[in-house]
Length: 339
Image 1: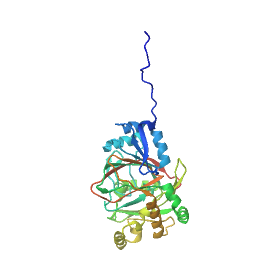
Image 2: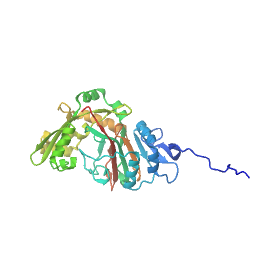
Image 3: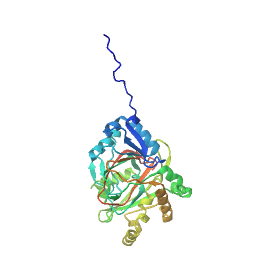
Image 4: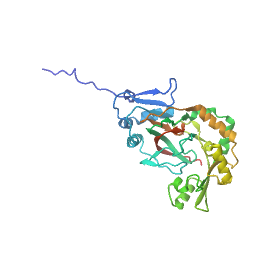
């Protein structure tokens, strides 16, 4: 008797979309793209490892992806997810803010007073090199607020006053930093070394002027880009830390204290036009205003992972109340060879 094969399982072709669904936080808005599991107990790490091209394509299209409702409940699981996408995780040198390492190349988000906001910015846009991708993982959401606002910098660039864009693109921006003054990072923390020669070697490599001062203090000065062109999609975006480093970014009371204690050239950090002339506060306020107008904010849910293209999307931080733990990973170093 010939066997019947009619009850055999038929082969099923699984596409990336058959295991997940793409949604949005707000009807009609696609920034960020939200990816959620379509099936129960979907292993995000395994899924990501098999769908790198899909993730890359969506990231380049939208600039930001929020992975939500997957069971990512530990820092280790988060690290495994990131490494499933790329093995090129970065350490954090030439630091602008304190962080603690909680995994291999996984860090706490900026250790900054909870009652202070962090303006929107691109990670390390003050440097000559920066991560192409950055991930945030919510281990513990704050009791109140504590969101990570994001902005599509393609929109930011279009909304900026053409006169401001032309001025910055022509002059570039100069950053000055004074380490070891007692109110900001030490050079040992910023460069992650106790060895002066390593700092000097790094500064020469990245075309940064440096000067050792009395009391084991260090001053650096570097001229950097104000815009960047995405290496894959070719779009130009606003890409600098001028509004972050400038003294006008400080609260009025803090600003007055610093100006009373330090000469302008000795301030812990500041920003100028690339020719050394002062940047008008009104110009920086206008830039901050455009960032705020274009920002998107959503409340964190524990287990969330937010993946950003660091060229296309800027990020910040709301003030918050209660314990909050967001961890960060960065990958795929890009070097600006025009500096």
